[in-house]
Image 1: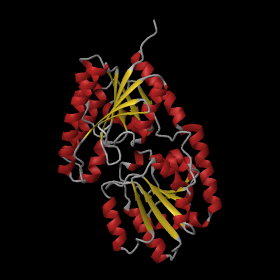
Image 2: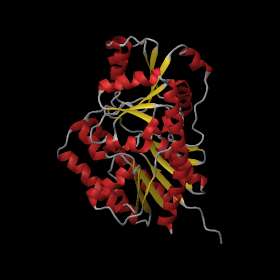
Image 3: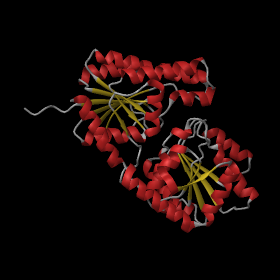
Image 4: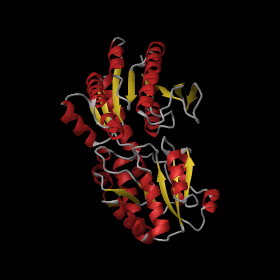
Amino acid sequence: MKEKNKNILLIVQNNSFPFDKRVQKEARSLKRNNYNVFVISPTSKSENKKDEIWEGINVRRYYDYKSSGSLSGYLLEYLSSMIKIYFLAIKSVIKNKIDVVHVANPPDFFWLLFILLKLFNVRTIYDQHDLSPELFSIKFNKGFLYKILAFNEKLTVSFADAVIVANSSFIKRLQEKWNFRKKPYKIIFNGPEASFNPKSNKEIQNKFEGKKIALFVGLMSTDDNVEVVINLAKEIIYTHGLKDVMFILVGDGDSREKMEILSQELNLSQYIYFTGIVSHDVVQEYLHIADVCLTPDLPNGLNEHLTLIKVLEYMKAKKAFLAFDLAETKRLAKNAGTYANSMEDYVDKFIYLLSNPEEASKMGELGYKLINENYSWEFQEKKIIQLYEEILS
């Protein structure tokens, strides 16, 4: 008798589905490999249907409170979300006979859910996208709540049946902090799919014709250092007089409005264009016109450990990028990018890349080669399926 397909529940709290690129790719990979996939996520402006079938994947969204970036706002957001996620997860487990619950962080408040799921003989995977305690400390400093978050991370790791991490720095950190050794795990890079490539859009090309394009793609939260792009624009336009440069910022987040106000205060509105939330296809259209791509994330005790999805996408698009000297970024991208040690150095190296398109093109080709040989999603999919087969055997 043919064995029935396994039922998988993916849970994401900090982004809607399928907007969350990593969870989207994981869900599609599981679906391609004959798993029945269910997803729980919050709604968003663009993804507001409560129930939806998306590419054969069953999506259940809940309405949640969105923090504006304050501590009280985050506490209210997480409390509201956790109540709804726990209820919907247990309901889905019973109704859909779920075999594996796969949870993405942040936050790390899922250990109690993992304990409850053991009563239903459900296997669990903790997918660590971010380092929640370090992220909290950057926004609000270390203290009692930081210790609570660290303890929650430890418990979530302890009660999960398997762990997925975003890079080798994450697994090293878990081993050093929590003596993480014997539990099954996989390092899954958030690499672009083969289909992710720059696309021509005549309307966008015509709109910015005659301009050199500096492109930022990503979230605009308080810890994403988007102000670096604004300050770079100020230096390039007013100190160096390069007024043929247009800075395009693709994405959204709780600091976007502040960044727009800052650009207006600095009289930069005609040189900086905010797109807001756009589809992945439109991201690829903006990458098509980019001359230099920007990674403004500053060293802060967290960013040194992160594999930034925008860097991987820049590389896949054959675009040179400018970043600060972050250990994990430099280890992964090598000479596909240029790395600055200060804001002054960032400005100088931006001008160098803009003035040397042949050198920038060489960097882009190297990045593309690294993605295709090591980090593309097709390699990561194989590792995910191996982990699922291991914990379900």
